[in-house]
Image (cartoon, rainbow, N blue to C red; front, side, top):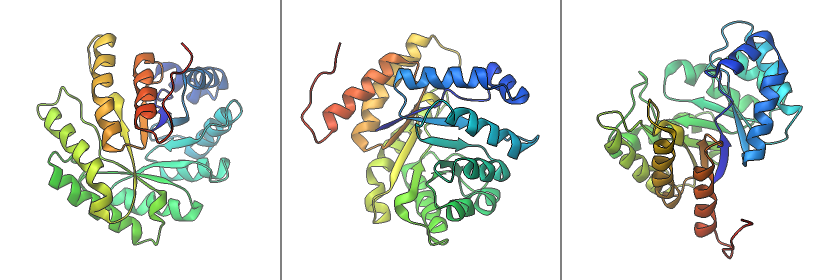
Length: 262
């Protein structure tokens, strides 16, 4: 699994302020912290960027690129911001992401063809509803794949995210069992290997002790790994969770397992 840091999020006050004032300091400090913690890619979640989207996304990409060469995921619903961000990094980034929502099919998916880049597809109904049953997710996966292939895009560049649900939801546990089943069955369903991503931070979102959040992440993570997950979107400051991710990679990898330095 590739470990993708979800820490750089506009919901964090210091990041929101830095982006609004175009101050690189707090952003670069956080990126360095993520890299040191073990991130293998960085998700740049800048929100919808309703004000000066091209300028601010270009600033964000250039600010991050100045301190790391880790792969980037550009995470916004604003097509203009995505295009500016992709241009700023020469197309060497992943679009995060699109779904069957009409605005995203029309405004975001074509950017994957224009810039020949990877793109994340979320399994959501066209009206943004989250599916809960395995067969419902499978039907959405097929529809998403067909919409993607309709633009003659390479299946190898698609990453499907079945959307982990918070356990606080009444049907959260049932939903997440369906997520595991979908990840496992996706290659047979689509008739071709397709990468998958999951946002582990969703699992324990809401008010609860940090130790409890990490315990829940550590419990669910091996299930995701065993199902065949490719990209793990996670808070990389949760050290025990990252330790579990590394152990899963070692145990499920093709090489000879060896303990790392202690």
